[in-house]
Image (cartoon, rainbow, N blue to C red; front, side, top):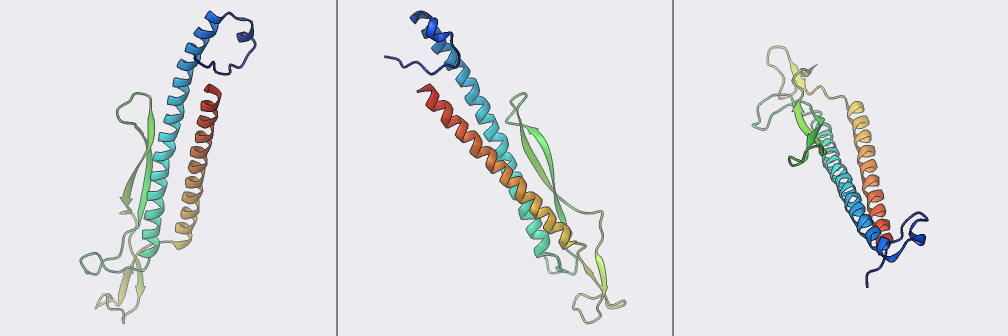
Length: 173
């Protein structure tokens, strides 16, 4: 036999068997929608986790290259700070469903920080100036804390959604 789910309300106790069977079908349809909503919540939180992880990686790269005076080819050129831009995007073409998207940009608007150090190997031979990246470590650390907190918030949202799904499944047994 089929086990009837727990239904919140008093109408079920006063109904006939025929109504209870239709209530089971209605409840099943509602639970499908609830499951889809929970999965959509998980998708949004997952995409936000990926975006915040990338933000933390970009910040770590900025901090690691705060004193880098050469590019990947070994030529004297100050590292350019990177930053992450967040936006909402349609998830896999489904109308009305969005996820968190991101793009990594190179900060072209800020020039290098020039320091007079004639003994440095990358110093300009005429002026003795060295081009260092214009990276404010305090701002980078503050951004890292914000990214970490946002990551934790999305992890909590995923855990709460999982707990709600487990409780829903227990109610439907």
